[in-house]
Length: 161
Image 1 (cartoon, one colour):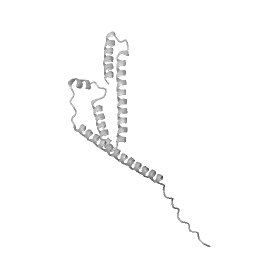
Image 2 (cartoon, rainbow, N blue to C red):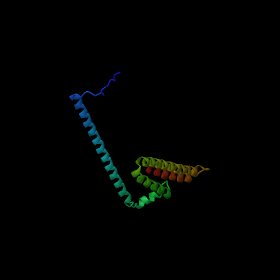
Image 3 (cartoon, one colour):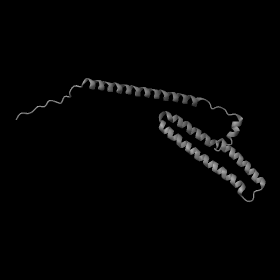
Image 4 (cartoon, one colour):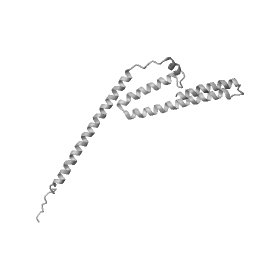
């Protein structure tokens, strides 16, 4: 019995139109790759520039506050220790952005949420204290006048937040 030999399949030559289309697709793919590379370089340059600005900002001394701002600062809802702790954590988050932007952003979200919760607790405590100051027993008109003054002060603080 004779073995039949089959020639390997050879694709017929491309027509001029097919060659032109293939050449155009290859050219477009090359252009797209070059554009992606250019965008990646731009993004990297922007990130490096942002990191440099961030480093410069962190190295600058904190501006001093005017006396009226210092007095206002004493009337805040958070204790100085809480504020310093939040500032320290925020600095860590900013530094972390360089190595892990996604995690840094998640941490920032958690920090802000935690801070809002702490502020809400403080506001509720202060509001409750105001209510207790005039709702116990039979308050005099003077007691109510003082309570109203405290409410006005609290109201003004809330407006400034």
